[in-house]
Length: 133
Image (cartoon, rainbow, N blue to C red; front, side, top):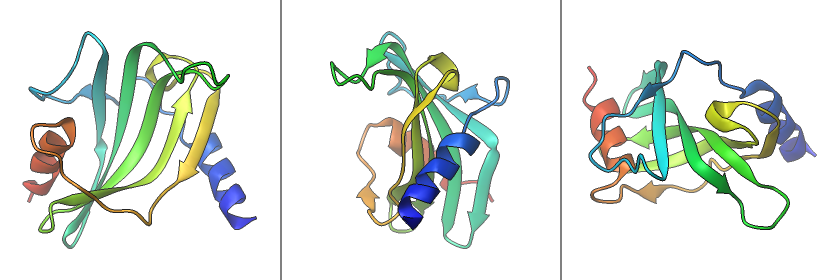
C-alpha cells in the first residue's frame, strides 16, 4: 500500500515545467532518436551522493503495443561519485513530449545500484555532477 501511495505521489508531483530543462552536452546523445535534458536547479550534493533530475524526450513513441505508450520520461537519479554508480530514485513516463500530457508507469526503484556504462549518457552525467564542488 505504501509503495502504491509513493507511486501515485511521484506521478502527480513529477510533471516537469517547460523552461527548466537544458540539453545534456554529451557526445553520446542520439538526437535523431532521443534527446536527454537535465534540470541544473535539481543538482543536490549530500556528501558523496549527488541527485539530479533528467528528462528523456523521444522522437517516436515508445512502449510497443502494450497500451502504455509514451513520448518522454522523467527520472531522478542519485550518483555515488566515488563508487561510480547510480540508482534511479523515481521515474515517470509521459504521453506527450517534454514531460507533457498524462503521466504513466511512475515508480520508485531506489534499491538497485547500476555501474556507470562507459561511453554513455550516464557517464557524461556522472562526470558532470560529480565534478561540481
